[in-house]
Amino acid sequence: MTLPVIAIDGTAASGKGTIAKALARHFHFDHLDTGALYRAVAALVLRDGGDPSSRHDALDACKLFRPGIVPDTELRSAAVGEAASQVAVLPEVRSALREMQVHFALVPPGGKGAVLDGRDIGTVIAPHAPVKIFVTAGVEERARRRWREVHAADPAKTYEAILGELRIRDARDSERAAAPMKAAADAALLDTTDLSIDAAVAAALKLARGKLEA
Ligand code: CDP
Image 1 (spheres, rainbow, N blue to C red):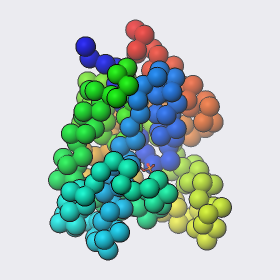
Image 2 (spheres, protein in one colour):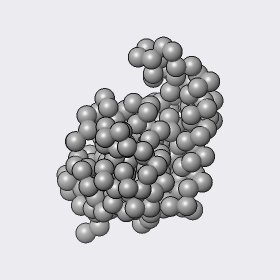
Image 3 (cartoon, rainbow, N blue to C red):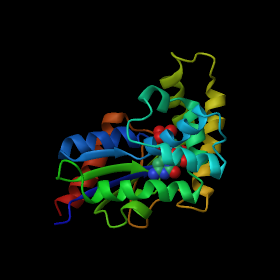
Image 4 (cartoon, protein in one colour):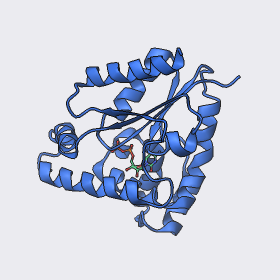
């Protein structure tokens, strides 16, 4: 029996992670944050003093990678996010991380269904997913959200710096040759610029219900 898969792709700070978690909770599906895999590889490169754009350093890190090997606090740093988008350009890194994502989508641990969020879930990892949602928001609004998230821990980080970083990351993610960030042809687009998180979750839930209960 094929289990249902919900593919959530989109830009940084669009709300895709929160939406993915909420949908997983609602449907009692398992959730995989695929960005965390790229972040873990990047963190291992940085720990070793390596260069995240080096194929050699990134592949060494892929060999060390195990789920849970990098603590969450380290994964979530801005430096690791930036390095993740550099390792994610490399096709060899993408293929090293591919199988575990495909396996999670096909055989989720809870046996009911899977929600995966990332950049290429609807296009590459789970192209047959019955539910595909591409989440985005205007870059200024996303920069405001990131600034609010990091301000307390890093008061020196300005809104302008975050805006610049997001623009670079968007361009790198969407212009790379290997599995670029893009909406699948059959994905529903969800623009969260003017939506509260509750409203964004409600909209995603409506889209998912419409497809899963059709
Ligand atoms: O939360 P945020 O969007 O800042 O980052 P993330 O989702 O944790 O992803 C970090 C980086 O990993 C992204 O900028 C992408 O370059 C890369 N990534 C990817 O290429 N493919 C995925 N399926 C997930 C993440």
